[in-house]
Length: 168
Image (cartoon, rainbow, N blue to C red):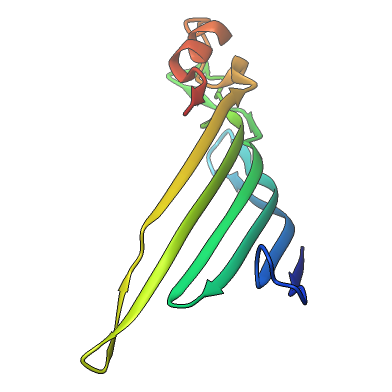
């Protein structure tokens, strides 16, 4: 779902146009597998993602300059549910862990640029100086059953230390 707005003020002092978007998406992918063995196994897994974001971009033209600047922020949450039954190896039951940690990721950014254009021998020649700042924070969640943990060899603290938190 997306809601967008294009605003063009009559005075145009700070910008000629302001394009704004607010969006939300939800995706789900599921897999259900049943083996046809003497002791049937069943594995159900999923990959579910929700994303919410906001983007704003302004443009301003003046002489041979086309200035643009904007901000964006997005938060994504993903879950990897897993259910497994009757998985056996060498006569011993195996407890499967989820293939990937659930996560929450936040991205934010801002930019400014200027496209300067000149006519050189009947063709457009442009120079575009620009700068962008981007920030990201990613954190794994629900790491307590991430790996196969039949013998208790991997703890939630072990997996949290392996994944850690990423912030840039």
